[in-house]
Each structure stands twice: as C-alpha cells, then as structure tokens.
Amino acid sequence: MKKIIIIDGGPRKAMNTAQMLKRFAEGAMSVSEQIEVKTVRLYELDYKGCMSCMACKIKGRASNVCKFKDALTPVLEEIAQADGLVMGSPIYFGDVTGQMRTFLERLAFPWLSYNDYSMTAPKKMPVVLMETMNGTPDRNNSQGYGSMEYCIATALGQPERLIAYNTYQVKDYNRFELAGFSEEAKRQYRDEHWEKDLQQAFDAGRHMAMGILES
Image 1 (tube, rainbow, N blue to C red):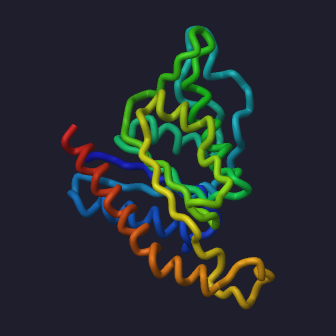
Image 2: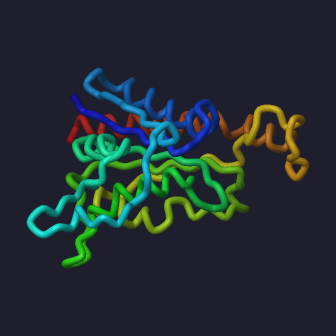
C-alpha cells in the first residue's frame, strides 16, 4: 500500500482549500485501491512551531525528523515514511496561514545540516503545493510558500503548484462588510473557473498516484 499525506492548512472545513484538497484525494484514490490518502487538518491539532531545542542536531543522534513531542510529532513521522505529500493553504496577507508556516518550520528545519548546509529529507517524494486566494492572476500579493518552497524542492523534489484565484470568501456577501468586492463579478469568475480549478486538483491527484505506482 502506498500512502499520500494531505496537509490542510486552512481553517474552514468546507470552503475553497478544503474542497480543492478533497478533489485531489478523490483523484488519487480513483487510480487504484493500492493508494491510501490521509488528510490532516492543522487547525485541529495543538502544536507549536520550531522550539529551537536543537534536538535534531545533537552529535551522534542527529535526525531529519523533528524530535519535539506534541500533536504534530506523529504527523511528521508519518510524512517521513509517505510516498507523496500535498500541502494546501489559503493566502492571508500574501502568505500561507500561520498554522501552515509553523508546520513547515517543524518539517524542514531537521532537514538542514549546519555542517554543510545541505537539505536532506528522510526520502524523496512527489509534492504538490496548493494555494487558494482572493487575488486575481494579474493582481495579487501572494508569496506562496516563500523560502520554504526552496527547502521542499531541495529536500523532497521540485513541487507542482496549483493556484485557485479570486475564490469566494463567504457564501453570502450580503451578511458581511465586503463592499469593496463585487459579488456579481466574483460569481461570474467562479462560474467560469471554479470547476476547472477542482478538475485540475482531481487530475493532479491522479497524476501523483500514477507516478507513485509506476516508480
């Protein structure tokens, strides 16, 4: 059995990021019963970012998996043995959510060697980085996964990026102070693009699963 771990860094269980990741999972599982997909919602875990305990750097006991013990520990250990990794986050203030950022600290810092500055994960694997945002393709301030994307590419392999632009922020714009947005324009964009975004996520899931089975 091959395993893909999906990390959902969004706070809402049924909105854009969650829907995209669900479609990815459906695409992966449609390939074969030999593909197991597990989704972890970071907002449901009690954990912290890197504690600078340096336990992963102790001489003779260095580890490329974080040694700090909390609710994130089993997730990181499972990722170390997985065959594929997907991370999805909405974009807030041009960046991934705080939960995703702190997760990435715990994931990537143990990969970094302060002897030669190499980045070494427990194993290489295909990676997809997913973003959902209010911005449009020609007007957004997203930095995506920032410097962490370099760490991921170096340690795991070059990631595939999936971006859903101009997504709905709420289901009913009349209930909120959102006059700076045209709900009609948002709806029109969504009607033209959202199903395509979901299909792209489904196809990416199938592509990852097929690649894992063929490797």
